[in-house]
Image 1 (spheres, rainbow, N blue to C red):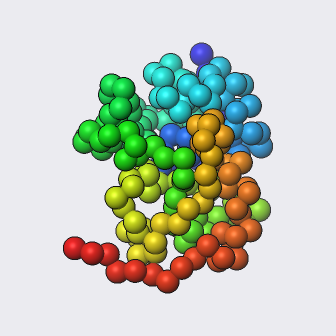
Image 2: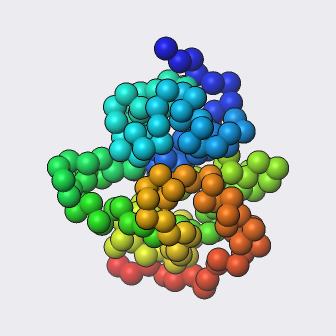
Length: 184
């Protein structure tokens, strides 16, 4: 049985499970995959939201049942071969899981500003960014931009490793575009 780690983030609004895992790993100074193995599960199991892996993450992160349920709801859970439950609705899995990961560079930059000496422990991926029909950030009216593209899910959802690759572009605003008002 694990104990809650002293260094652990508070889940961000609309954060996904892989994002939370990457932030707690970054906060503890290890890679996401190694952190998962050290905590008794694999990155692949957490991406698949296997119950035992999710419970282990909750325990080491000191998450309440409500916090874990919220993180899982923003991640999307498989319900059958090609469907996923997301925030109480069922979607075709391709509507949520895509090799192209998009996000709002303004949200990520603002997250990083919480602690510029350890930005990866604060940069959170939001679950609503996964929806292929959503094209702008509701907070900033900024278009969601492609951040990275990886086929294998274990590479795609190693969030802190991917964010480290684009961190300079996020911090200096290179990924930002003109804002767009949302349509009705």
